[in-house]
View 1 (cartoon, rainbow, N blue to C red):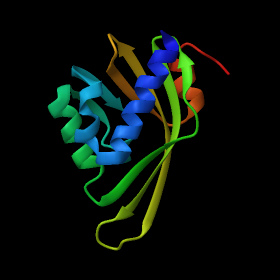
View 2 (view 1 turned 180 degrees about the vertical axis):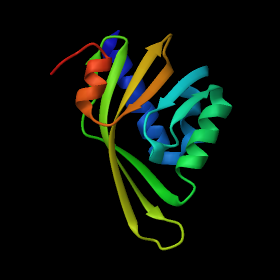
View 3 (view 1 turned 180 degrees about the horizontal axis):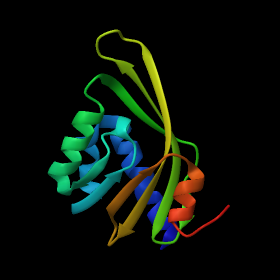
View 4 (view 1 turned 90 degrees about the vertical axis):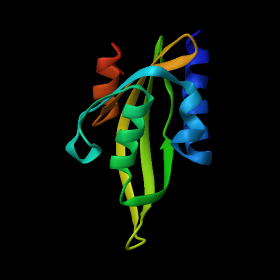
Length: 132
């Protein structure tokens, strides 16, 4: 099952990169809970599809061409750790931007039910109960 979970997260990232959040929503549980931990990522907990839409709109308001570039996808059983780089271009100045963090996704019933952003891979692995 855990390799299936890795593939679900990979599919979500691919769909997001292809067509943005709406293209990827079918892989998010309707009652998803997404928690961000950094102020520049609109820190807070966002619930359900509408909450995720609100978070992504706020976090990307100044950016376009947002792309998620995973360094790897780490199998953590029911969870998947994804150290990633986010690249985008400013809407006004058209300058390139880059941000790195780690995402911890929890899968149930073939859908992502929880996501949490961490400052780095080590923190996400610790939260997933794995040390590498």
